[in-house]
Length: 111
Image (cartoon, rainbow, N blue to C red; front, top):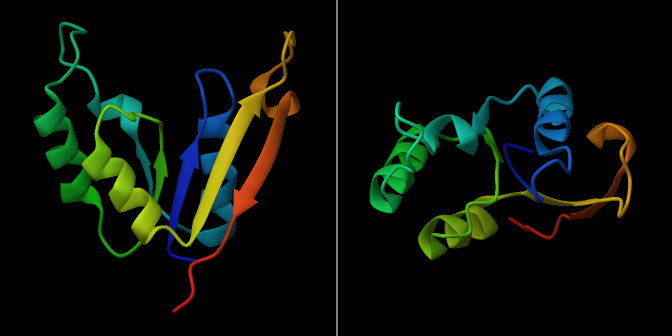
């Protein structure tokens, strides 16, 4: 397993799950939030954001984030990932994300 994508809304535990998967599979994590914002906290231009992420994506990675604002990046993740993890927060829960999520995985890449 060399490429994993973790999707989920804010607070669903994406970074926690990405961290755990990184330990298991020994893969580097690309945290989308680290590259989404300019120093003044304004959003990075979509094309610059995609360029940043794709320039870091080598042969092994875990991509942590939604950023569905770009179809190219979403399509790339769905095409390249050997494992795709979708997280949902537990409705009405005030617990920490790692204890309040439902995890569903799809691992269909064959080759």
